[in-house]
Image 1: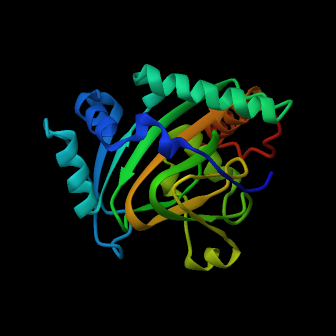
Image 2: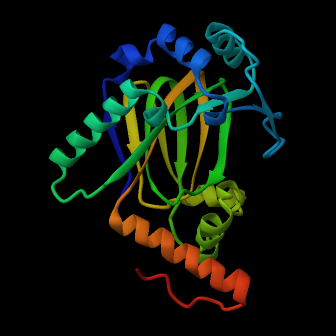
Length: 242
């Protein structure tokens, strides 16, 4: 129900050492990663997708350090057993700390991005946790209601999977909560809350986590159904209750 920043020790885990990350990059399946080059900071949402092309992990890390790039190793918890075990342990700790926490599905990825890279204003349907391992980020969190996020935005995300297409205006920042994340800190936020992120120092290595529960899944299905009613049948939904 509110943003929460906590500390963690993932930076001390061998899984996140530079040699381990370099090896992971070299063996990562093509269908599970995205390599994106970003335009100049003022060129909003100018992306160009690329391919690792057999480059060594160290070469990739050096290139990301020097350019406006980000590499998203999607579903690392499903691709790599050690990362899967780590995430299971994390959620076992969360359940122990929060009786009644009913998350039943979770997935992690690793995001490696350049100094100055950014993630544009967007919202996610599942629950989200952001774990900073190296470098520093600044996160802007916005209210998860009108006008920052409408029912139609959620419907379009559920129907078309276009999280970054929701409108953003600079005056939204007047209503944002701003958090600086250093290595060893993690951040969670209210379900569906729009957010954007900028790297402020150094090569950034983060673990991104999405999770679901029966209630979150029901919300996703309602947004999808309402989107179908609106786009396919011309019926404007009147509620999003689960």
